[in-house]
Length: 370
Image (cartoon, rainbow, N blue to C red):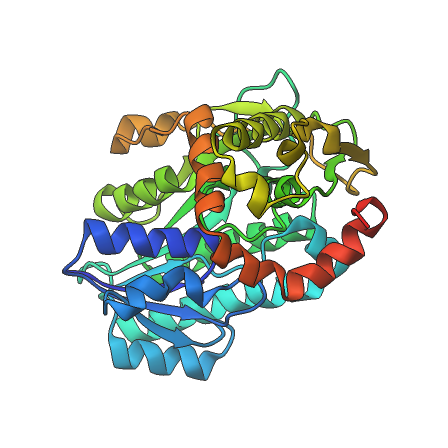
């Protein structure tokens, strides 16, 4: 039986991980620490909290006193750190917030774990797992092989730089203090509970509301698409099978340009409306409600500053050593994601009615439907 502290567990990947872990390991104690910033949504965990499957604590990972007291009270043997500011556009607007959470917050967690577990942490089976991103490696040439675990770091955005710094801190604590740590660098996640500032949920909701689908630049930026359920399974394998001190790249194995993925979402929404007449009544502003195509909403906008052209990770090492293989094909994963948002309108309506609306207005007001 493990005792887990999951930081950032009310966010997108963290919430999916909590659902995954509570189903796969029902006997384990799971405590979630989340400060519930704009992207943290307690509704994503409501069913687990109501069923007593997890225990929720509101708090900031940068609050050393709060974190130390929580580790002393709960005595977790495993920390899984999802807590992070993660949106590149926001990091360009306010880099300092990313340094506070992603760098200082990670250091506070590491220090709290070191003090709570003591010098015999590895012998006691303790583990600090840090969830990172492929963006720390920078941009990849069109014909280059995927990033490996030994690829030098070359972050391009304040977000990526903050995550790179956090990775270095984790490795430093592992080396200096022998803290049993592992790191995973994942590719672009998608799936349920994703905050609608990210490309896929943003486009799904805009398709339903008849708003422009903003395509940065030419839209040919290539990403390696990883369904969040596969990511959660990979972390499980790392916690169960990886020795301390290892770094693992986790990718979905499917590289597609953003503009192609957005086009697929348009087609999936159009097909859903054609199969269910009730959708036209629920979402009358969607082009599909009038027999049109969602592709008519696609509009190229000014590219993001310093936008990386391509990310792709080589998952050969985790496949060979831990047996991980992404099991969700992109076509099936996109279809399941569209249907999840169609079936969980209450969840995303509660999100878009608040702070997200203000951010959306600032970002895309010139392209928004009157």
